[in-house]
Length: 458
Image 1 (cartoon, rainbow, N blue to C red):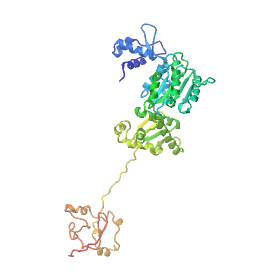
Image 2 (image 1 turned 30 degrees about the vertical axis):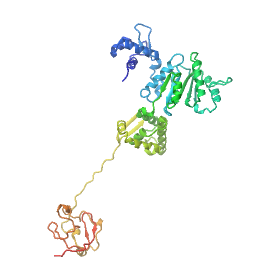
Image 3 (image 1 turned 90 degrees about the horizontal axis):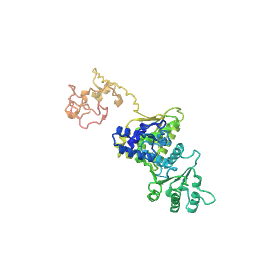
Image 4 (image 1 turned 90 degrees about the vertical axis):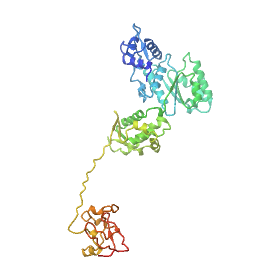
């Protein structure tokens, strides 16, 4: 549930216009939201200090959004979940950029692959759009893993050696981004912190963005006292996966100009398989699968790209192992036995088309009454009627089969078929023939062995 300050901010956002001299007063906000005027005034003061709202110089005082926060088409819209799972991180980033005297230095904390580098790039775009830095201002990015073990060489590359300026001098009018600062040695980190303290009032340094792994707690505790804007990016398990999957699949659909389809089982695997490098792993697996599907359906111009589980790496299939443990959560997000269509407009969920069921007509067997069934004939009678060969299983047709009343269960004390053990019983008024060397079952047409003891003939 939103707090009072966020409710007030949303209300100001709906009832103000930065393009005209419009706004809303404190009394109007208090009456509309049912809050006390003193509480509304306090919340507006906090929003004013954060740079999210501005007030007019006329009486009564009218509050409206600042130009930076009113820009709904800003660079932060490029972030997946900028108004959802990353909303708080985006607010902190905006506040750090808009702070007086060229903003605040920023520390981005998150796991590998969580998007720290991309967040820094988006913040640089936002700073250019809002006029905080010049469009030609440099954005110097450095991965601290590239530095060697020589501290003197690293310090010279960062701060200069007296003859040539380092990266700080190169990004003097722009932004310097030091990625993975946990790989810097202790001496280099202390040198960087001393520069922060010495240049805090003079603002001789450029705006500096730092990124650090969330497991490097000692580095975070050392930097958080000197870097006030601390932005923590949520991990993949803390973010709603449907928004990420939709973003990546729609992006690939726009890139290939095809509609991408997949079954709900494949979507379940994508949501539950272990991602070692967070969002980076998820994005890579989706792109690999689209590449394999595009190669398979290359000649089908304009057709759909159907992603099968075989298009992904074997590690994605491990998502099936977790589907039972997280069944309730998955069922709430993925509809079973459905097909998902991703295209430029978004995602569509439809039931797969099932082929129409073929109607089969079962005809009742026609029983010939003009002659007894060949099953009841003895071996001698077969020879006399021209059946010299023992009939095969395929020779028994519907016309030569016994009536169903002859094929009832023997254990129910009803008439039995010819393959029963009691050959001397009569079947519906007919005398059973003498037991011969071979008998056949009219139900399954299986040949039975000869009996050792024969019943006496009448």
